Image (cartoon, rainbow, N blue to C red):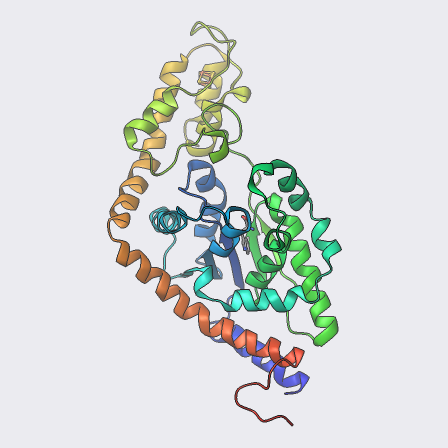
Length: 352
Ligand code: TRP
Ligand code: SF4
């Protein structure tokens, strides 16, 4: 196969299912989706489905990079994530939703890319350095953890993604993806486009204690919480500590409840801001309004995900459907990459 054939195959792969630009993103099966994820990544994914050809996957290989020692929750967490995504509005008729490990071509491409990825690129990755210092209990001085960005590059490049919706923390990984693609193209001929980030809006939703909403702080409101628990969590949120009496003027900018109004209650947020500053609304009333607005969003998603979780075979079907769309594309790309690298002899061809 010469260079031109390669490029033609690549174009075929691209236009097979329509001409929309390809978007790829993944998320580790970390547990249940919470309101912070919903306001950030998930809402973004839902919004992209109409405009782009989206490949979204549960990154279970990636989960192993830090949690290989205890995989007991991996399957349940994966199912929970699928149920949460569907309940939040990911539409399997629009989006290819699948499980990373059901397409082992991701792993093969990662291996091939690892051959040309300098260790120094991986070691200088800031996320790697941070996590190495933070997760001292996990024994993650492993090849898999160091090579994580290489696997992520494979995830992205295998579908010839043009755009990758990620949070700011993932930007160094995306830059590495671009560098790996560039190096591959330089060595073996142009195969991969360099993908661009679609930055998820960086506004961080605070959790019930006022710190960033995160599972590791135990301050989340998740879609697995019952409506009653959600109401209690909202009612116990930290507010402006200077407000003791209803008539004390408040400072909404430092209040967690206000941050929730800002994110989820656009119609009332201005009114609440002025009532709070003027000392004309009590924090309890304000929280009640917040709780009922959050319930409007949370309760239907919670109920839907509970129903979905009761039907495991349906969830597995959705993942299978996604994999059957993703797999032929990944296989075709692998054939192109193997050809470019002169690995093997292609499909049954004799050595020339
Ligand atoms: N690294 C991402 C995270 O930890 C998850 C991920 C894996 C990903 N592969 C990806 C994101 C490919 C975007 C594209 O959140
Ligand atoms: Fe926060 Fe509302 Fe109390 Fe103001 S009135 S401090 S916004 S809870």
